[in-house]
Length: 333
Image (cartoon, rainbow, N blue to C red; front, side):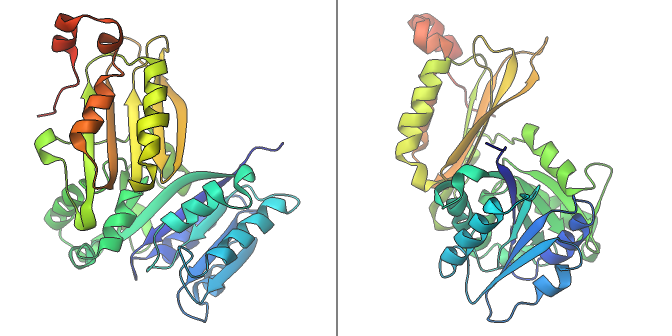
């Protein structure tokens, strides 16, 4: 079986500048990249603008792919997965009024789920209008799913405003890499292309102080877990599959950079919606081995999550009460 096709989701509130960025990125991606564009209205516009850049474009109009036109999205993904040759990448640009959840559901539960692989959620937010957009629960949800947050139109803001906005957005997207865009192009000394942005996400994880576990709009909460030491692989797997599995419908984003006994590399745990992926990152080397995780979701029970995470530690699995008292997962201050 061929390797699954990577699928990148591009989301963001109305007028954030998604299509402008996508047009630039398509010029850098392989020529066989295909695009699915979702527009809420009955007439597609963005597809015509992008047609010169992508090998194939499917426009889904008349409603959001997270609900009304979900079946059309599932069919388009299945058609691309069955095509010969298969594309090297699929980019799905959602309507500004859509949640990324519908696309994620199509990837994890849809017709072509075996042939597709989620390869990042990019959320674009207009820096000049971000404060207004953040009053809407949809914007907070789009941030919560993000692997990458692009602050667009930074040329319309002063630097102090951009820095303050970054700090505020990070509370809603602790697992995301942040980037800036000016006039539709990424700026700064770091990642300049879509693939470079996606490559940076592996090490991105902002763990917040326990007293700053953030309650956002509509009950979305970010819970941070930290342990100065190693975790037991078997207990960790049982906790992820069992406890987290029972509340997966309420989890929008989960990310961990973990030290697991017997594994030299960092264990990277990433979950978006109901899809969880485990990969290996750089080796620990001489660095102190520690484990940190952030979970975003609806109405999360912080104390229950902390207790479950604590039960995965080496000290809890094999140590006595004295050892456990000295090595329990700590609150971050």
